[in-house]
Length: 310
Image 1 (cartoon, rainbow, N blue to C red):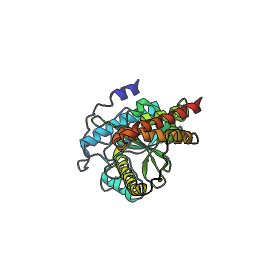
Image 2: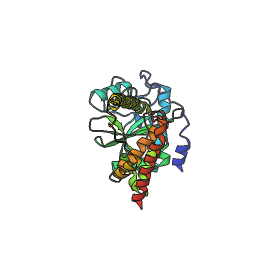
Image 3: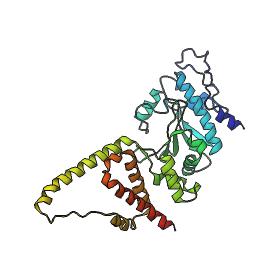
C-alpha cells in the first residue's frame, strides 16, 4: 500500500533540507532531499547541460511543487507503468539554453521552471499506449494540468496540478513544426480507442472529458463571420429590390439531412461538436428565428449517426 500512501500524501509539503556543506550554492535545498518513496531531489534536477549555477530550486514554492511532482510520478508508475525521467525541473537559465539549442520549449514561464513539469519515456510499452492509458485513467488524469504527446522526441510531457491551481487537462501534441497544438476529439479517440468499448465511445469520452477550448478566438471568429454575413446581405439587398425575381436558395433542414448522408462519421461528430459549442458559448450569434432550425439540423446529425449504428 506504499503507493496509496503516496497518493494520500500528494497534498502534503515536505520540509526543505538545507545544505550546510555548500554554503556558496544559490539553492536552499539539498539534492539528497527525499521527496517521495522513490524520488530524491537530485532525480528531478539532473541535466547534461553546462550551467553557471546548479539546476536547483531557489524558491520554496518550486521545492514544494517538486514534492507534489514526485508524488504524482509515484502514481504514474503504479497506475500505468515504469518510465524514465528525461527532464523535470529547469532553472530559467537551463530553459533558455534548451530553447537556444533548438529544443521545443514553452514560451514564457513553463511548468518545468515552476517545478511542475516533467518529460518521461515509457520503458515497457509504446509511447502511444502509455499516452492513451494516461488519458483514460481517472487517478492519473486528475493530476494532469497538461499532457503532450511528443513523437519526435519519443517522450511525453506532463504538467501537474497542485493545491490552489487545479486545471482541466489540456491534451496537446508537438507537431512537425515543433509547435504545441491541442488535439481534437477525433485525434484523442485514436489513442484511447483500445481501452474503450468502441471508437464511438472513445470519441464521446474525448469530447466530454478531454477537450478544452480557448473560447476567445472562437467568439472573435464568430463575430467576424457574423459581420461578414451582414455585409453580404446588405450588399445583395439593392439587387433584390431592383429585380423582384432575384431569389437566394435557402439550404433547408431537409436539404441538410440529405447532404449528411454523404458525410463521414468523423465529419458528423465534428459538426455536432462545433454547433453545440456555438450555441453554448455565443448563442447571441445565432438569431432567435434561426435557433430552432439550427437545433433541428444538429438533431438530424445525431439521428444520422444513430441510424448508422443500427
